[in-house]
Length: 236
Image (cartoon, rainbow, N blue to C red):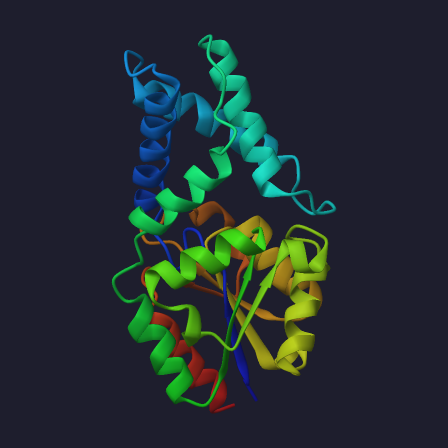
């Protein structure tokens, strides 16, 4: 019997397009504060994304280190390349821009509410610092919709390590076989859920990850489709 549904955050509840706009505006504010608005913020954004993504990829499944430190170091490297210093309040700038420009998938709220109406525990399991996820969810107006929020900071490890998933199950007081996890990363989300015995749903709007669908129990192109999958599982 299904009793809980958990969601990833970036790329699952909020769009990657919104994240791109957010990060571009972070770069614009950094350049403004550094007095270097002569530089192309899009080029800096591209270099920052490459630097940050490479660093973050190395952390998959490993013990938690603060994402604020990873992102700040990525910004420091890019700034150094262009001959200026990253602002001391880079993380505060980052959170403020996420609060301002974050964008939910259009069916995210209705999906969450539909699952709660079915009497399910609805939570988040995300690779995130606690201050970031709390500020972002509150800015989006959905913080109070979730019964639990479990981060890599809480668990001490990054997905696909079992730690975040097991901690979330403990907080929800459900067994792995009673839970479903929805994410957009087949290797981290689907594999991580499978390793602890949870079922998984991959959100793949454009079918871009087809070669990795085998890692997941279900694949959807939009979040609202999760509700029908859940109803089917609840009938078993």
